[in-house]
Image 1 (tube, rainbow, N blue to C red):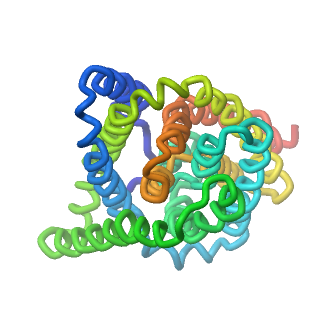
Image 2 (image 1 turned 90 degrees about the horizontal axis):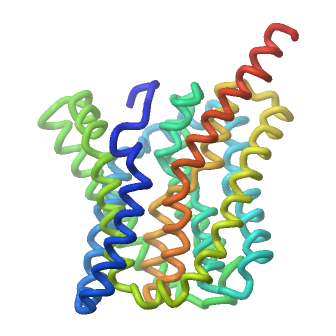
Length: 333
């Protein structure tokens, strides 16, 4: 993965493709009610493919390097896995306490930081991409470990769940994709070079992730059309707290960057990793643990769909910060 990344064509069209999957799913679900008997299996397989593709590009070998800048890493871990979950819980209590399923979906969406996509926006904002690469594996590992803790703390009394269901979900959607991805890497590197393998992944993984996510969204909406339409007003309640979160996220990132004297490159990375919440793991966990609560999954999808334009705005704001704060400070003006 190169230090300079940008939004490819599919990334630029991401929101439109996912919104299209929503409407196409609602259309199919409304006119072909029999599709619902297949939707669960389609979601199941597409989620495994989605998580497999993420495992292929997660540099687990970078874990050791992450401890070389423990100051930045520690700040990122505290922000992503302590401060943001508390903010998510407070916002959910204030806006969604009367709607348990949407409450839990909102929590799951916010407590799982993006595992890889945040690097594109870090690069676009001239942030520290190599340091971000070292952050990727711990972002994934910590959310796997902490999701059951968040569920027990913030949502266990609203909709109880079986811990055995989490273990099963972990095996199917985390361990299995990890083993498949590890095997794929070993085989490809034995047949071809590391450079060839990385170039292949850089080319094909992003479209695979996007279209497998689109298939997941299509199948979920097609399989649960009536429930989603009947609860449209309830689901719409999630928009405002999500927007408030992104505003608070940006303000918090700039405040912490100033307090801890982060360089601009570190500030840009910190801002992007604490803003980007696009982790398919939250969707897989919701589907695995709460298969009969589609509103949880749809609440997560709402956040995923609106995130792209917000992150593009974050990049533009970061460039303003770079000019008005860091460059002026460097010249003593």
